Image 1 (tube, rainbow, N blue to C red):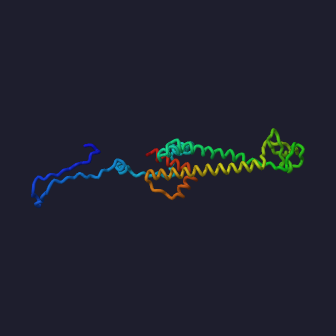
Image 2 (cartoon, helix red, strand yellow):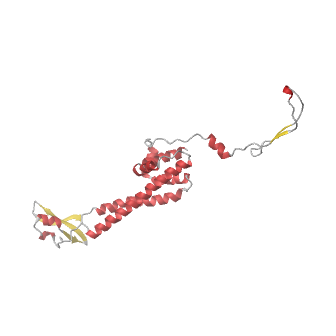
Image 3 (cartoon, rainbow, N blue to C red):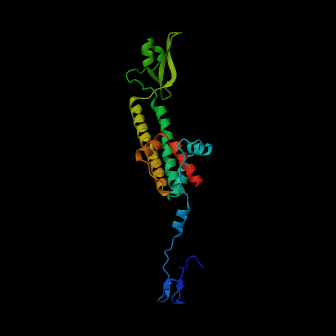
Length: 232
């Protein structure tokens, strides 16, 4: 019998009487059987999914989540129905912006040149305190002056300085890049975490808890999801 054919049962009258003098008045047909869909059968046969602990030590998932988080996000994105490339490239872009902000920060902490202490030649300054506040220009770069206590002389050091306007612009750019990149990465972590739980019919935790996991334990959270998707 094919799986798609509804079972058909027919009871025909063969005799009257019998145990308890039961009489069958006529033919009885049983042709209504409630079918069970394939998806329901698979769901009923599938055991409940349980995530392991966030602090589970697994070399593969931790290594990939730390050094290749874009791949993990793309893999989870494919699982929840977005496709691998969509979130992969979007996450990779903001991940690059997040790392680039460190180079901007390194430039932002450069000392600021005092506009009132500029000299064409550091050797002409003989006061120690005045020397350390002064800067000069060498090859279009602002260079701080330094004082040598042994020879009691002021000279141009190797440390550069930036103008006050450049410093303000750099700090503004760093704050903007840092806030935008961290916000997007954290929201992406929360979204894929909660969507994956919904996809696997798992009970949702409070959204604040998922935010804390994604913001402060992003690598561990991605590793936990990667282990679950890989095992499934």
